Length: 445
Image (cartoon, rainbow, N blue to C red):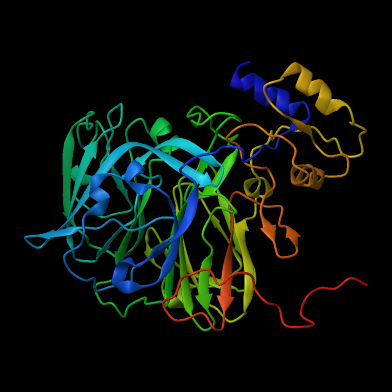
């Protein structure tokens, strides 16, 4: 049965959940990452990075940095070398394997062994040299999204340069004339290459370190994929009906939380390279939008928000002062984007008796395990998953994530901002679940 037919079949009422059955030596684990001046962090990497990382990722910067580096969720910043006053970065475009959460890996295309690619960090006024080698099975380019640069460095295949053929290496070199939050991605066969995960963040710090300084600075990209249940490769033809909505190609509960201390001024930088807008909502704290990919927002033009809509191809950076202890939800407010694989064209089955529907569907499609939308709500599916229902290979549960009080019932574009009074300065490690003071939790009457 063709993939399209399966989606139509799902639209007849079969919402899907799937198991974390895949056994892989790419299983995630937490590592103490001490790059950037010894700042303690816990980032999620695969167990055997040599298997998936390219040589360019192990270049060691020969000198310190005059800026407060960003923390890339489930990622890292690309090292550079100083050569005759120029910061030289090596970038390899190549097929990669990305673990979206323990139990699911996806065949992506990316940079330097991962998708999204590593974050590029530099300083306003720097001269940068970006040496790009193409190891993809087709040609590519890199566009430096939002940067002011010479036209011939803009990375649009056929318009400003020849495409970088397989096996070729091109050099981009220019001076950084602004500071702020930007992205990089291909402008060659971009429907395929971006659908396969080719993207990354480009952070330019102010020339004067005291300008726009914050205590904690996080960044990540919004990305989406269509990976059919039981398969490993995204469908690049999909335009809107994606089934994996992710922060930095990771989904909850496999994504890093943002861990801060009370009193910290926190910046969160978000780029959107999906095919739709995302209203990103944070619980517990209002924030102000302080930067876009067009530049910094003047202080007298900022206003308070708790949700910011990030359009296609846009970057938004917002800041807040962490005042309220706790584990605060941080998510896209489009509810389908906080769920895992499912058929979105699901007819309303609420209140409909459907006890034998799963058996009939299994007879028609024995290679897959489908569940009907619950009679009383989709939470029934979470209950069945908890009971150990067998599910398809390499597909995550639709509603996943366990909290201290039970199932959180969200995945996809969802993570947590963890605010603690006793979180040490410059310590980004996960403090665990919040210990609520007595009498401060909603109670049953």
